[in-house]
Structure formats: C-alpha cells, structure tokens
Length: 388
Ligand SMILES: Cc1ncc(COP(=O)(O)O)c(C=O)c1O
Image 1 (spheres, rainbow, N blue to C red):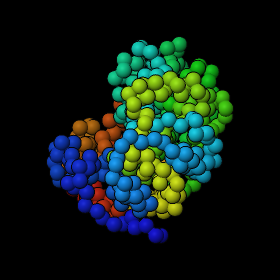
Image 2 (cartoon, helix red, strand yellow; image 1 turned 120 degrees about the vertical axis):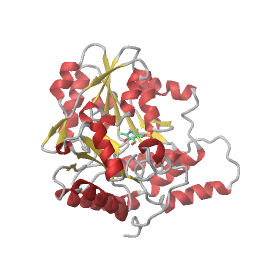
Image 3 (cartoon, protein in one colour; image 1 turned 90 degrees about the vertical axis):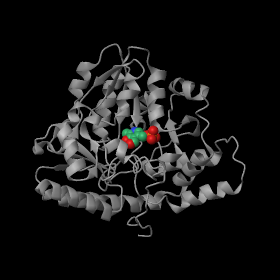
Image 4 (cartoon, rainbow, N blue to C red; image 1 turned 30 degrees about the horizontal axis):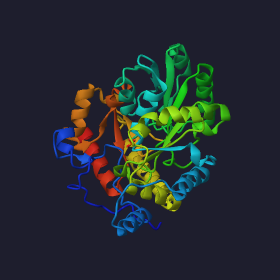
C-alpha cells in the first residue's frame, strides 16, 4: 500500500462542517464526529498537485471546460463501469444536491409527484417538497439485514401525476449496490409509466469487494433515454468542498430541460479549482481508489467485529458507500432517546436514522471513512456505553 490512510490529521479549526459545527449539531463539542459523508483522509497528491499548478498562474478569471476535462470524465466512466458516454452528454453542476433540485424543477410542474425510496439521504425529500411537488415514499423492505425494493408498492402508488423517480445507487444509507435485475425491473416500471429517472450515483466509485456498480443508463438505450445520471468525484476523493459534479444525459431533450435553470443562473460554468481537481481525480485516481476501498472494507470489518459483541446493535453492512446503517431497534429506545444515548453516553456524533425518513426509526448512521484508530475509538465508546 503506498497511501497512508492511518494518518491522523487535525481538522478542527479548518471551517470543516464535520468538525467545526459539533456544538450546533450535537449540542456539545464532546463527541467523536462519525457523521456527514466526508472522510478524514488527506486529499490525494495528484489532486493537490493539479491545484497547486493552477495556482502558479496567479490570475483566477472565468474558466472553461477543456477537452482534458471531458476526456477525464468519459475515460473514468469507461474504465470504472464499462460505460461509453459522449462529451456532449455531460453537464456541470455545483454539487449533486443542486442537480437533484434542477432535475425536479426541469422535469415536473407544481403538484406533480416524485418518488423516492426511503430510508434515503435527506435532501431527496427537500428537492421535492421545497418546490411544491408531491413526495411519494416507496419504502425499502429490510429482509434479513438487507434492503430490497418494493416494486409492488411502487407500481401501486403511480398515477398520472407521477413524473419522476429519484434513484439512489449505491443507496445511502441502505448500503445497497443495486443488481442488474433489480435495476431492470425498476426501469421497466418507469418506462411503462413514462417516469423520468434521476439516478444519483454519487457513491458509485465506493464499491466494496464482490460488488459491481451498474449505471442505470448503461443498461439499454431505452433506459438511457429516460435517465439523468448524477456523478461526482466529491465522495470518492473527499473533495466535496470544491462543489463540482457531472450530470450525464444522452437524451438531448431531457438535457435541455435539465440545464435550463443552472445555465440561466450561470451555474453550469464550473469553478476553476473544482474543474482542475475533477480532471486530476478522474485521470489519475484509479490506484488511490483501489487502495481506499481495501482500507474502507477493513474498517467495515472492524465495525462488524465490535458489533458481534453488542447484540442490541446490528450492522447493515454496506455493499457500497462508507456509510453504514446501524439497526438499534433492539435497544428499545424512542428515537430522541437513542440519539441522546449516542451523543451523551457513547460520545459519538452519528446521523439520526429518522433524518432519512420515517422507516429510519430505531437506526443510526455511522461514517467509517476515517483512520482506523479513530473508528476503533468510536466503537470502544459505543461498546462501553452499551455495557453500562
Ligand atoms: C446520495 C447522495 N447524494 C448527494 C450527496 C451530496 O451531494 P453534493 O455534496 O454533491 O451536493 C450525498 C452526500 O452525502 C449523498 O449521499
């Protein structure tokens, strides 16, 4: 291994959302932050080098997207997922959450229905509700510690007002890397009912051994025609602070509708450093990513080993993402008490299960994207608190 993921780097006082908002989020500074999807690893050398190189030219004016930028994206999709895309299909947004909002606004009218599959990343809810669209919840089913889609429920809820489904693949926080058959079955329903799929694939690079990410739009021309795919190097390389994402849409009509709002707001232009980092990540990131995935899988082993000795908490071991949902229902605590337990007794800052929807009740989410010694400290704290 040539990269050192064990290195501990002080992040307090760096305007870090994860570290510098503890009092506001948890009501105390005294928690180990294992929450928001932000890892504690040093930004890879090839990204820092690209940023420093750009800074050497000390004029930071308006920027453009170069062939190098587009080639980095098309090359990454081909190498990582065997997905052949064209440069023309790529739009830029300052983040995937903004893209979800642009998609909802571009593809639906006031009062239209948008489906999401809960428990799911909280901004999926606001991307729909904040714009006067109706939110339709299609809860995932938890069978033997593994989440699955409920397609009967999905189809039963669809009516003529249902226009969009926001898919999360890999799924945060359910941890599923959806299989080809699952995606095809979902896609078939969407095709049948003229539903556009916004496929949030921000975690698509973070795939644990034995699993494979399949972009929804790569499955067939028909599915590509109804799908808008959101990707970004932000989770993979931990550069979310550079706010840069790519949206891939082969259907030019859908792309035009999607781009209308960001382009009129000049948000599609990109920012100088975000574009430079994205290009470096997608050009040189393979080796670093391979090493990261081995490390994250080892961190999940560590959590699993601890939880084998804590029967009240069960790990929903993620197939993708570095975010793991913890099933704490056997602790028999109302959600507010459960949250309080982790903050006050265990002194760890986790995400609250109900932030992901009503069926997150009894769950908490832990982020394992940190040096192993930090994670071990967090698990020790949880173990001690449970045994008190
Ligand atoms: C599924 C999913 N989509 C989007 C995001 C955030 O996207 P961005 O920071 O690019 O807006 C996250 C972050 O945790 C996420 O889990």
